[in-house]
Length: 143
Image: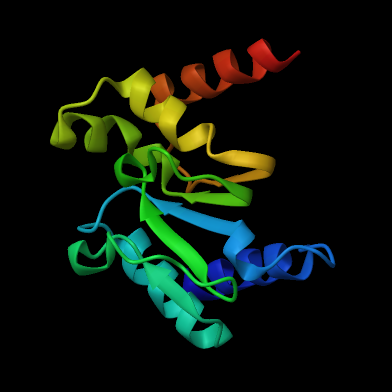
């Protein structure tokens, strides 16, 4: 999985335009307990790109520098935007919404509305039916 994360993140970093910086890339993971967070951290380390891990409580008040990619959980991403956003583990949104006590649709909105330009949603096989319906509803709103 880490190699796929590396591939997706490298693509997004390569797509940053001349006036964009790594700060313009925001990575979202479901929670700090999931494998997605560990895989994202490992991928960022393998890429050798500086990053700030906002999934760690000690970093939440720190200000990211322009050369840093930002990593957040779905829930902690409120108020944060990126030119390019990669969402890993969206198939777990129902489970995470129950854990943090936030309505499934509201948490989905938070995760999917952080992008200013391009949004990449990476999901593993076995995605839940409610999640598929939610994504279809979102896509239909864009038509």
